[in-house]
Length: 308
Image 1 (cartoon, helix red, strand yellow):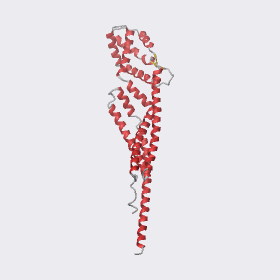
Image 2 (cartoon, helix red, strand yellow):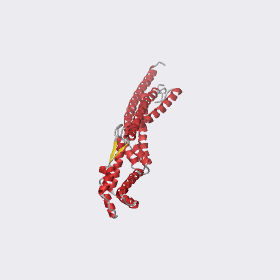
Image 3 (cartoon, helix red, strand yellow):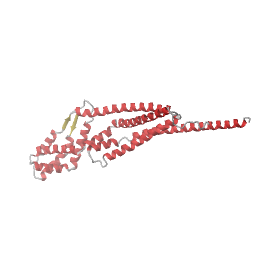
Image 4 (cartoon, helix red, strand yellow):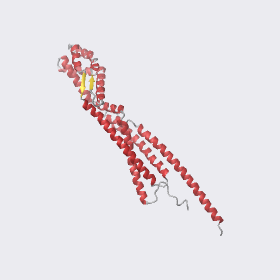
C-alpha cells in the first residue's frame, strides 16, 4: 500500500498546483533567456576589442575608402596644377600601391580610435607620418607622364592636412551609447536573476521531490545556454558568411560571433548544480525505497504472526 501511494517525481498532487507549476516553469524559461542574453550583452559591452573590431568592419567599407580617395585626388589636383584626366589616372595608380593601402588603413584606424575617446577629450587625426611616405610615389607617377611637379609643393599640400581635429561631441556620443547599453543590460541581468530565483523557488516548492526539481531547472539552464551558444554562432555565420556581404552585416557578424564562452561558462556552472541535484535526489529516492521495503517487510511479518 505504501508504494502505491507515493507521488510521482516532480508532479504536484492537485490541478491547482499543476497549473501554478506550469506558470512557474514558463516564467523560469523566460527569465533564463533574459539572463543568458543579458549576460552575453553585458560582456560584449565591456569588450572594447570586439566593439572596435565591429566598428572597424562597418567603417572599413567602400564609402569610407571612396571618400579618402576623393580627398586625396583633390589634393593631387591642387598640388600638380594639371588637367583632371591626368590627375585621375595618377590617383588611380597611386591608390593601387601598397603604400597608399597602408596609409588608408592607418587613417581608418585613427578614425575608429577617435570614436572611443573619453568625454571632454579632443580627437585629432595625425596624418603627417601617414602621408609623408606618399610624396616620392606621387612625384614618380607624375614624372612618368612628363608632368613636372615640385615635391615641396606636394609636401605643403599634405602638411596642410597633417592634423585634423574632429568633433569631440560626436566621438563622445559613441562612448555614451556603449555605457548606456552596459547600464541597461546590467539592469536586465539583475531583474532576470531575481526572476530566476523567485520562479525557481516557487517551482521547487510546488513539487514533491524538490532536489529532483533543482536538477531539472539547472538542466534547463544548461540546455538553453548551449542552444544560445550554437544559435549565436550560426547567426554570426549566416549574417555574413564570406565577410563581404555588407559593412553592417559584417559588424553584426563580429558581435554575434564574440564572447560565446559566456554561454559555455554558464552552462558549466548550471551543469554542476544539475548533477548535484540529481545525485541528491537519487540518494533520497533510494533511501525512501529502502525504508518502504523495510516497512512492507515488517507488515508481512506482522501478518504472519497474527492469530487466525
